[in-house]
Amino acid sequence: MRFAPYSFLFLAGTAALAAAPPLNVYDIDVEGGKSVLVVAPSGESLLYDLGWPGYEGRDSDRIVKAAKAAGLKQIDYLVVSHYDLDHMGDVPMLVSKFPVKHLVDHGPLETSGKGADERYQKYAALFSRMDHITVKPGDRIPLRGVEVLVVTAGGKWIEKPLPGAGKPNPLCATTAVKPNRPEDMEDNSSIGLLFTLGKFRMLDLADFEWDYDAKLMCPNNPIGSVDVYQVSIHGQDKGVSPVLAQALGARVALMGNGPRKGGAPESFETLRKAPGMQDIWQVHQSLLGDVQHNPPADFVANPDGVADAAHWLQLTAHEDGSFTVTNSRNGFQKAYGKR
Image (cartoon, rainbow, N blue to C red):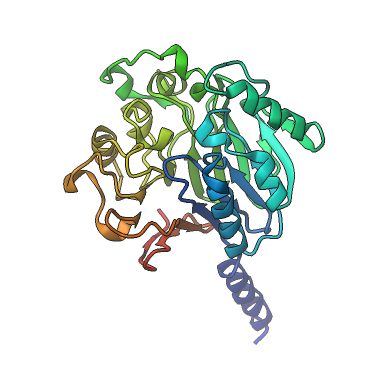
């Protein structure tokens, strides 16, 4: 009987661990742009990009809808990964619709063209009145309850391997080179983030492209393995290199593509051949690929031929490394156990 109090404490501790709040991640449909909402177990939130401007505020409305569905009253950290149209969206409009506490970016605009200067000036006028954070590789965004490590930013990347990583990457020797195009400089300035909750890890490099994958991942893999890979640059083939996509050991790939933006058949093949890859989930069915280059219907939030109701994919992750992915369109859910 004298052991009963200790048994009770053990069971109570086990129950508390099992009931620990999860990490929730929403891949929002912004029609081939990017917008990922992260809600930490603490209740704090991070919005990673905000899709397109225009369209009568379509994407900001979709973000607000997802934020309210997640029970949020504010966005704690709004991360603008880079200043391209389909990621930067309309920051002032979003802030006018939903409270935002901190703005995070990679620093001043260094490119021009396609209205980038005008968009940036509107954004700069806003962050001059708000709490504004500029990050570099190796920094951490202080989202309570989840470690958020900046892996890439401003065209640079982490120089030292993370604990347990740093092994040679054999894919470097067998992967073709795709030189970076000058017009894609802003893509490769993307803030890339590694999210860690206990044993769970998720990598998202925004629009980092093929050539810069090699700069980050060769000759050694500085990141190690992850559970979930948020597919770079919407699944366009110029951004999904085997040296990254097949070296991470991810069990699940989440792709924020549009019907005709991203979702390239070449990218699908690269992901499907990745060691350890169990499933590919897509925000949209890709009309660039046939049935062999799209996931089964339950793994697609917005299929072709169905009225586009802007369904999202929701990832729910736990400290033991287990997680589930849910399709908001039909409630289909698949669980992935701890490793």
